[in-house]
Image (cartoon, protein in one colour):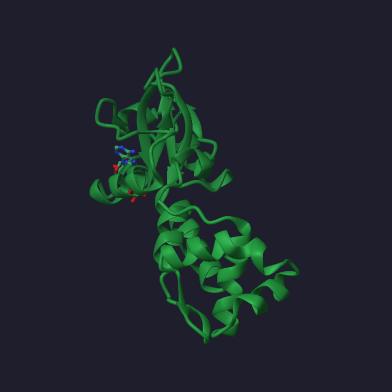
Length: 212
Ligand code: ADP
């Protein structure tokens, strides 16, 4: 995996915008001596991010994006993107669950049992379905309509965002409860399709505009 230093990223950016450019010019641009950059330039040419043409200078080979994208997007763990979960008790009514959904502007609720362990998930569609022909929304507990444990798909905080995203796609769901490493019934966060999409798009745009 390639982990470029701040200076190496700066060099990439300089070359990208000024190619072909000599080592001296890069050094001048950074306000350092050319010898200071020897190692950085060696690494960047060895990893084929930069092309060095004798007597012409350095070119950007166009290969920075894959390693940078790979590093930033695919190695990020769930912990760095997870958000606080919205947890409700399983005796909460369908009516109150709908109100909670709107009040906190969330797409799903995680339901816990009497001892605080994850027992279910309630989504928007679960609630919509529960309202059809139901005049008892105020007295129907979410426990009746939720998707129940052990059918809940969860993820641990040290999993990669890539794997969490795969689970979301595979199971056609919008969010995953992030659970404790040891006690997998203890919910510590949530990771959603929206957050992952936002992260991927923003990172892509950042990389595109050299804003590493
Ligand atoms: P929506 O129902 O609003 O489209 P989802 O796509 O997340 O939202 O949910 C689809 C179904 O999958 C619902 O019945 C929901 O209870 C269930 N579900 C949601 N998240 C999970 C999860 N992490 N594990 C298991 N089932 C889930």
